[in-house]
Length: 216
Image (cartoon, rainbow, N blue to C red; front, side):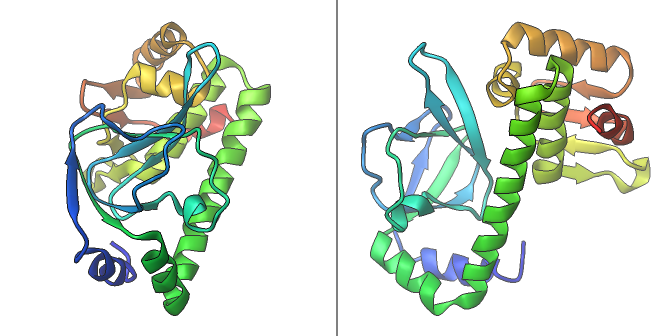
């Protein structure tokens, strides 16, 4: 929680709360959003569907995020889907109210810009490896980005990081631009090397330094 979080939470709290079950796409392509969604609990996946029917994950939001801000400032493209990755609770505020709130709270605006540029940096890193990297490098970059955004350190176990967000092999494939079969094969190889382990609910990275060296 940042020092800005209570200010944001105070603004959104009076607005209606909505719950969505895992797998529910509550903003769909071609539909105008009902407002600005403030994510209280859970995780939300933003994705597109290609002409071939393939889903490509563009971003994953965690608690404290609010979206779609591109719609709030009239630069929104309406072919995105927003889907609950687990049990999700959001509060939905009117677009005009949210824009007015951000305008009168410069610290919130600055925090939003920081999030935006961190997101852009992650997207550029993904683009770099999607365009030039091999399958293993592309997968590792997604693991590194996920560890930075959603990972927690275990202080008594050195550099070990646990990604508590449930990322299936299909989710990783969608993020890395790979097939699920390729991701499964590469994840098994990383597991055999003792670099990471994974279950149905989490990915644990034991050797973060080796992952980072692989994509340098």
